[in-house]
Length: 387
Ligand SMILES: *Cc1c(COP(=O)(O)O)cnc(C)c1O
Image 1 (tube, protein in one colour):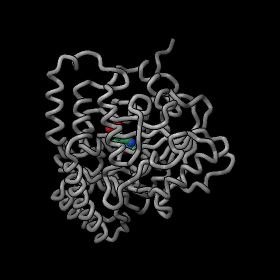
Image 2 (image 1 turned 45 degrees about the horizontal axis):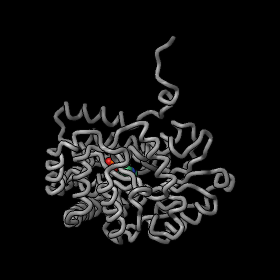
Image 3 (image 1 turned 180 degrees about the vertical axis):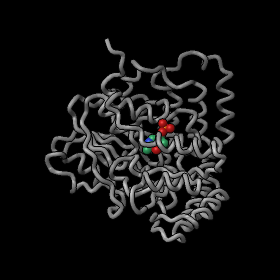
Image 4 (image 1 turned 90 degrees about the vertical axis):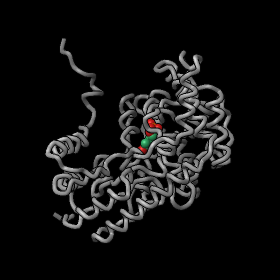
């Protein structure tokens, strides 16, 4: 017998960011002071009242035992009250809310719950890689639909071939969008829902960036009449409350879809640490001024970086939401990323890492303080983008 990984592991696409990671390690070893816009992870600390709730929860012996699979009813109720206050959406905490070990966990397990071998899923290009990878893990097929800048990074649904749309079963959407910074209005979401209804698709909505906005408040798909019949939405505390390390999020929406995901999870994990659930309640039910402060900080960084890049002659659109600036660049995004790192110690993410549709762009994450953004802009003055 040959000892080897399963076919699905061997067939994983090459990890494009590994080359960047190697260059970073090498540059740091040479003593280069890197300004790292590569990390989609808030640099700011979790607000104090949330940390206090974790401390209190950690002292409670009931939390030292296995938590309930779906999350405590209080924790699911907190999500439902947040949805009521923020989106005007009523959720049944028992049937329409499931607590997750971070929303990535739920997104990754979802295909096990809803995708049969041969089912076709429509996945944006560029996109967070998890949707396509885990669909393929279960034998599902993936069709990548392009998000183009000349279409405001919104799905061009008419460009999806008719036979693809007819065969499809699942449609993934992510607004506000990583990596493009694109945002969808209620009307945009209504068009997406109408397409899903026309082709009888399951709608998967990744709402990780709902609170990182600078213009209008991003809507939830569940605000739309009829969406609940076919939509599962992923809500994350990670970016909103600087809690990426804590691993807590929610799946909400259609009870059949949420229930199916819950059944898979019952067979895989044992839920979220009770003290972390108490911290999540504190985050969702507590004072939301910390979120306003977070937005103000990212807005300042966004305006500084976008103005600075424009002054260098790049054509930059300020994102209306998320903490990503997706910049059109000449030539290969991978080559440019490597040159930026080597020549000026500035780390970005090549768009091609999110799919072919991201080629020709690099992503700057605003997880860098303003003073360091200024350092990077100063260095970029001596850098030639068109090699
Ligand atoms: C950060 C992110 C998530 C959320 O991840 P968590 O597992 O909740 O930390 C989900 N989707 C996208 C597109 C993201 O960028």
